[in-house]
Length: 196
Image (tube, rainbow, N blue to C red; front, side):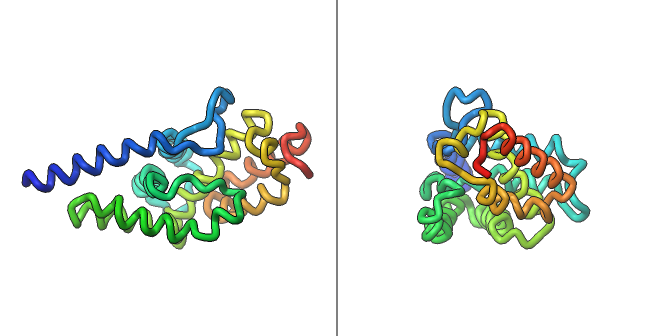
């Protein structure tokens, strides 16, 4: 271990603490406040651990956990883009790509490249692992909105059609969890949390 390498690693660790300051639209399940992106990432890692038995064949669970832990680090620079904000998504990919260049570039080359490759794989969602990780990333806010009586869905007037579009990748990425998604959406319509 060289002194310079350790300095780079510590600089990265210090920098990623800023993720705790990035607020998401999603409320905590007790509706007491908005969730931050670091809490979101931790929650997804726990979901990957607890729901591992529902991962499709070919999923590398350790890699999925790594992906969900790092997937939102780019929000340190790019901010959190609300999933139902169409205009915010116009330049989201470019903002996040630039953030990934800077943030993963803080690490020594082998580590920074490895984390960047994990992030790129998550974003592309072309592997079973990335599709499972991305499915968890969609299911988690669904659970939050269900538990908070509609939460941000009600706040922003979100419809069933919008949620179905957002959740559609789960059908392929975590097919055993898809019936749960449909049950929650149906229950949310019945309860008035979503507009039909």
